[in-house]
Amino acid sequence: MKQHSRTRPRSLSDRFSHFAKAAALGVGSPWAFVAAVVVTVLWLVTGPAMHFSDNWQLIANTGTNLVTFFVVFLIQNSQNRDSKALHLKMDEVIRSLNDAHNELIDIENVTDEELEALAGRYERIRAEYDARRAKQDDAA
Image (cartoon, rainbow, N blue to C red; front, top):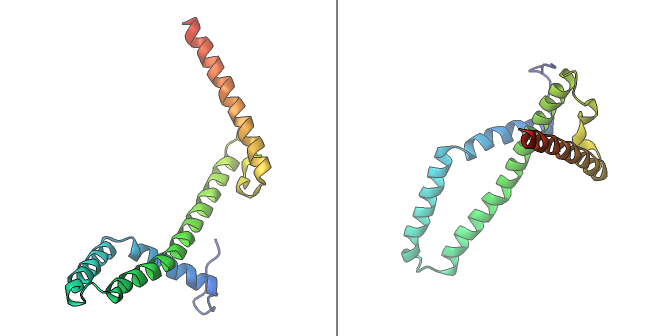
């Protein structure tokens, strides 16, 4: 596996990935939830002082919209990385098994039509298995 040199400048993608991993860990922590509850309680407590005005509501709406907007990118980045890692692990398992169908390696990059054809193939295999199983059950 390629090791990164400490003197080499990191690309924007590397920096974002590092930030997104750290932020996703932070946002997914119990402390982030506690902070969200505290902020919500503080907002509710300030309601009477601000006479439950439109500005009071706008503060919460704007804050939650901005946080949601940015967290969507963090979640998507994390999901993309996890998905890619899972696919690579599955590709290695397929490659290492003698009886596995190697055409399934890197299958996430085929067309929708090819996926549908493969799904049909595996549905037929399952139906054949179910038919054999039913015959065995009837014979018993």
